Length: 112
Length: 115
Image (cartoon, rainbow over all chains, first blue to last red; front, side, top):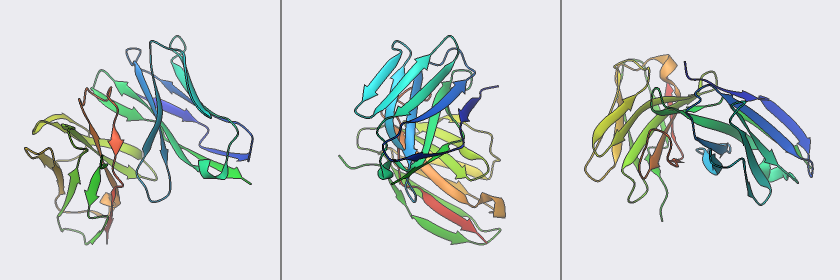
């Protein structure tokens, strides 16, 4: 069935270091991969997404890479700041069921 | 442009009661999806409405239902509440709602507690 695996479940980094979160998906037809950031008491916020016609996309300190052959995609945050602390979710569409499947989330803590 | 709004933000109910949650999508968006978020199960898809029609449904019992109005506002209803229904209920709107392949924007959620 459709599945999106996300690792790690928790990640602690020092301010200024980089953070990487990885996801794998099962539906080979998937072609849209969003990343969401959820802060305490708020709904998930779309921070970046990538479509399968590109391998990498950057937006300031955030980048997402996609490897369609291996069916995995990753979120990279450089020069982390305390305000990056949140739960991050990856997602991929399931064409079989026509809905967005979310990973289990990564709790990122950035220590000053 | 105003974001997705959800009301109420917090709700406390007792077992057996029923509840109705409301979601107003971003202006111009015709698709509204509902999700249940719990610590143990993560984000689980409930259903999607597009132009007043339910287009997709997740694996939830019939106690969970929804509808969408002509102005794209949506409501979801949970009848005969159980303790396990305690969760954050999130609504997401998108312009095209193309099966999760379009950008979805989430509201702040309604925190439901069932006692």
